[in-house]
Amino acid sequence: MRWSQTLIPTLKEAPADAEIVSHQLLLRAGLCRKLTGGLYTFCPMGLRVLRKIERIIREEMDRAGALEVLMPALQPPDIWQKSGRYETARDVLYKAKDRSNKEWVLSPTAEEVITTLASTEINSYRQLPLNFYQISVKFRDEIRPRFGLMRAKEFIMKDAYSFDGTDEGAMASYRKMYDAYSRIFARCGLQAFPVEADTGVIGGNYSHEFMVPAETGENEVVYCESGQYSANVEKATSRGPLTPTPTTTTGAAPEKFATPGVVTIDALAAAPYGVSAASQVKTLIYLADNKPVIILVRGDDQLNEAKLAGKLGATAFRPATADEILAVMGARPGSLGAVTATRKALDIRVFADEQLRQARGMTTGANEDGFHLRHVDVERDIKVDVWADLRTVVAGELCVTTGLPLKIRRAIEVGHVFKLGTKYSEKLESSFLDTDGQRRPTVMGCYGIGVTRTLQAVIEQCHDKDGILWPMSVAPYQVLLTPLGAPGTPTAVLAQEYYVQLQAAGVEVLIDDRDERPGFKFKDADLIGIPLRVSIGEKSLAKGEVELKPRGGALRAVPKDKAVDEVLAFVRESLSKLA
Ligand code: ATP
Ligand code: MG
Image (cartoon, rainbow, N blue to C red; front, side, top):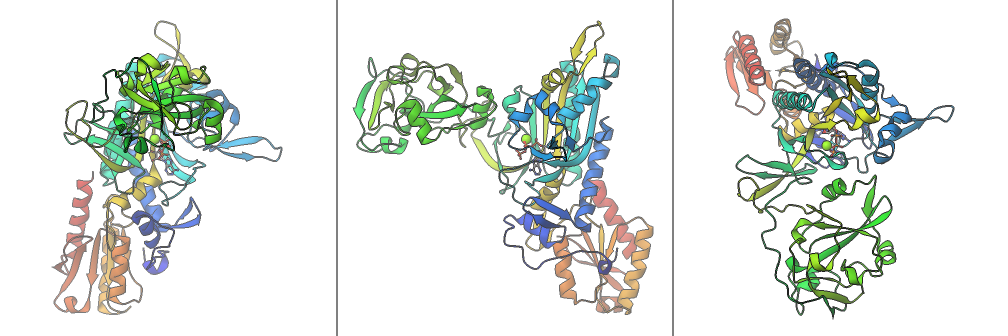
């Protein structure tokens, strides 16, 4: 391709609203343009990268035996009602109305549609296992679309859905996708690693997210340096807080004491009270499907909402507002407590973190503004309905497996594999006749890759101060030819010869045929990040040489007659490293 004949709208400066480096480079390198927040047009260079990532994904899905299909993005709401997600996914669902005012759903994912297909097309154990995938546009009404393609309103996802007859079969299908994902990201030149992930309201234990470590990532990953444990912080566990919870009884019954103006854990921990945070019980009020619930965690612990969601089993939940809390508890936040004897309403369910199970001699709010209770033995004084792990792991706590201190780092989620079980097959009636003549629900798995997010994650991981460093496998072009003389001069003539020869050899070549100064061309070359640049300048050419410059590597002069062979070898070798 000739630079002068395509559209590569590079920018000197990043637009002000591009916060993270990959978003800036996406725009500066002319890969995409923003239509409006969360919606992007792919320019020719960006689309080439996207197609390459898609091709790698297709090859690996096909290799794993998955079958490509294409489902409608416009979906009838009734199947969403059947699965229950018309309600549970309501926040992210885009809806559209047609001329007769009938409502439609714009697909954020496609479990409902694929299971509908399975319900009519899968009938016998002889057909199983089956795995279907598609690469298509998805829509999500995100609360905060941001960071360019990372969190968009419309994006491209590869989604796959496996159907098996047994749990073991489903595990094998899961494993195949897990392995395929590892290969896909490696082939894209991306360091992505699997971490145990939260399964939220769906339940079950089999879920991994593929994470790309990055400061700008929206996820936190808890990991053990031994490599034996890594999990999304939403799911992570440890051997518990570093300071132990008090377990000694300090009094026969809770005792009220005055704490005027004290409404925080810290204030109660400070003089004159001196009640350590570890010996306080923090009381939080949430509304789960509009019903209040009380949540208890240790004073110095943070509630983990993802863990809570898994235990509540509610369609929707949120923290109660101060007014709602006052109505339910008779006191304001900062003075709340769950001690049974002091509670106004006793029909509110209490969820308590496991750390509090043996906690004795604790202090908590008295449900009366300006007062707290001490000598609280949690099991003795509070009627707990559900004990669960509800706390958020903190860096430095010890790994359950190895006992080593855990670390936390930020990461970008590029993929997610999930064992679904029979949740969707039961609700949308996908069943099969088993070997024994019994009809059983199919056992499903679902597997997503954010294709457009992956593209940007590659930039986030592969860049320097001057621009992008595309891995050869996904680069928009493999080689950039940069003649440095004016059109018609010997440098331009030789570049044209190379262009023809390399293209004939199957190399993807971009030639910078613009009538621009060398410095300008080099800046753009670094910015767009083609893996190998061949510069043809008058001075070197006088010595019979041209210059090869791998992006991010050292410049090397080669005899002009050897250049094509050297380029071919470089491209081949770079590709084989990512095969
Ligand atoms: P997140 O936690 O980032 O919102 P998710 O858990 O909702 O993601 P999944 O439903 O598992 O995402 O979707 C599969 C993949 O699609 C994700 O791993 C991610 O790479 C990608 N993805 C999800 N939401 C978006 C979005 N708004 N923009 C771009 N990619 C997305
Ligand atoms: Mg996810």
